[in-house]
Length: 499
Image (cartoon, rainbow, N blue to C red; front, side, top):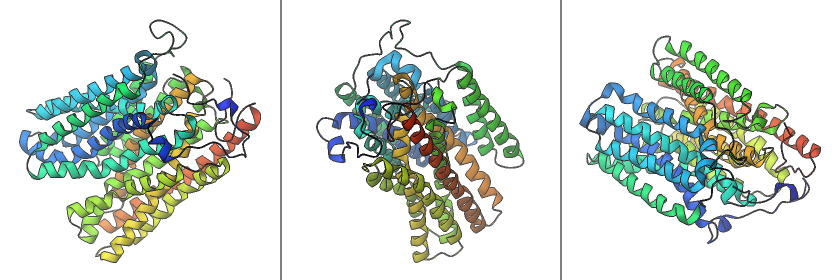
């Protein structure tokens, strides 16, 4: 794999850097790569929301209602496994081989789900589908560095993560349409057809070459991620999921702290192994990487409150399920709308200010939405409430492309840079699981009254924006310090300190 451009020939920190445009990204030269990168993540995101709308019909058809929550949990666990292995598989299979492996697993899992005669078979299909989905989502970030020039990294990141906003709308819409006519299996066959279309574009956009030495013990292939690290990571996410599923009684009070301990152990073991899931620089506090990853994680945690917004809309404002569902998509829509103008910012100093300040919009938007929530909200109040959610989502989207771009350019070597980019998705997936559990705990602590639940959960999880702003600010300070210390470093992309 080769970088799109050389970070060591960049202009001085305070000068404007060459930057791309949406027209260039979607133009003839890069259009195919953009389609593959966005298409893979789009399949994953659409599937997440598609299955949510299909599950009631599937359970009514094949039974297994006691396993309802596990349909999502199994998919998430498999996604975490494959996402953490992206940097291991990519140099061994090559970019094209990795994409075909991901699409193949996703397609097989989707077909098994579509043919499932009983819930155990559906769960098996979801696991296989999750393995492919996590790999697809991880490749979407990891290959931005090699398929696009550096000036297009922020735009590529915005396009890829914007697929979550599209999936938030497309998944429920398609799933709801098929479910309306009791054709839940048909929605999965349609997803399989979309997978085939993305697969047809892969040979046109993704190179087949593997890293040097990939057929042996050559230096071009980094060591594989340690099984114990992946196992601990998986165990931590499983404990989080169990704490979320078993939400009654004292289960969360035991399982969620245990999950935190296991996740810390996973990071500690990865550090001892020299950084295989996260890059080595992510374990140095003077590097920008740990702070950027922390900012990404906190923003991902905050976004998970969207799962409860439809419930609040129905109970507090009497919204129909369809309208309440679209209200829940306001955060994802704000995320996408915030990314579009933010990704084209050119001056490094402006990017730093915007990335550091944008998470405060998350806090402002969610605090406003929480304080606004109340019984009997009319049309005007609902509109204001949704606009506050849009502002919160926009704060995530405005900061996201700059955080991801800094992670992609913050490795001490090409190998570490690819590991850093691939780890964005792993961090996001784990943070999503944690965020869902945190949001669920806050809702339960809000008491039996829905208004109290909405106020506490929205205001509480909105505080992640303040913490995120602080982490991004610390990352910016580390970025500038490294740029000053390392010859050839820049405020937009300094090499990380040597180990």
